Image (cartoon, rainbow, N blue to C red; front, side, top):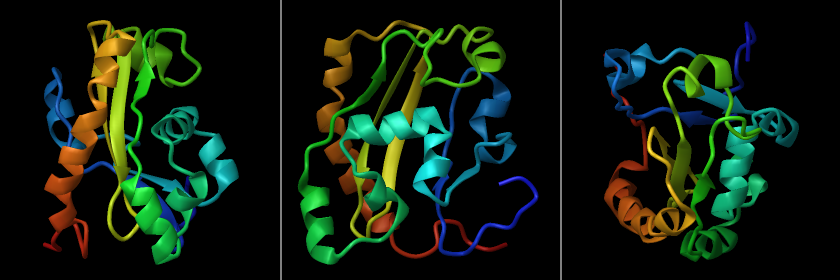
Length: 165
């Protein structure tokens, strides 16, 4: 949010892990501009087309991402089967930013994401930038993986993620 401080109740997308072909892509602390992305309002989220499209294609209501919801609504949201976020052709896509700095120089051909809502209302997503084209039928196979990832990360979804030094 530039030089402004972020209010403590603002939801953020937080980069928990990263891996890639470049050495700096293998340490989340080396990420420039993606370690935490504040999502204070629907309008702010709209200014991040990839995040907006990710949430939309996963079938998650933007309000669920931005604000805690009632537990009865959350149970319904948690139980839904989510779609995948898929951009078959990344180059030139309005949903994939940094075309000149990332997509073109690194040969990103397709983008695939999957995720869902954890108990407590936090959203999780895994996003893959692929140098190999990913067809839709392959992307659809990742729908079931989201449920397995949810089971794996749920024990870590309560309390602080990173311990203080």
